[in-house]
Image (cartoon, rainbow, N blue to C red; front, side):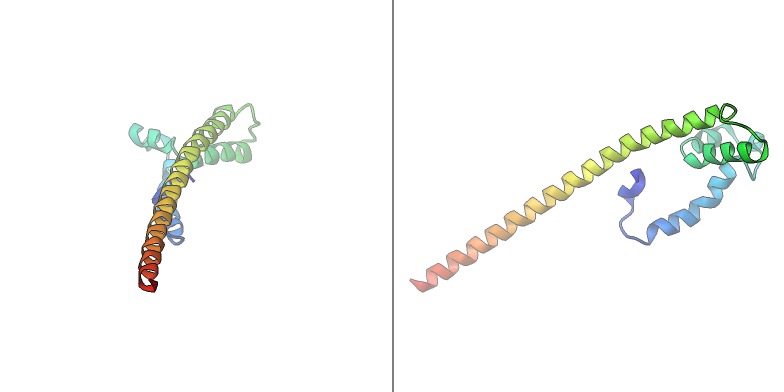
Length: 126
């Protein structure tokens, strides 16, 4: 939802999802060895919840880990939840303010146009 400010129509999210799904899978370290991923890309992968979610799920499902064993992933996902919640609030607040400003501007333009037409009509009657 934070990135939704860059999406202008309904079709783009599916295209972006298809484009980014394979790189995100590789960056998560599941289909590609984590030791083979450069440090820069490892830090970039921490921006996406899929990295922690996939690693935690695989450890729980395949390695019979419990919640204490995936504490790092669990806390990282909650941290991302908080950060993305705050950024989404800022993004949506900005979108609401911009929408309000556009609406006020259109309202003032319509009001001026009606006043102008009303003045023109009243001048013809007299």
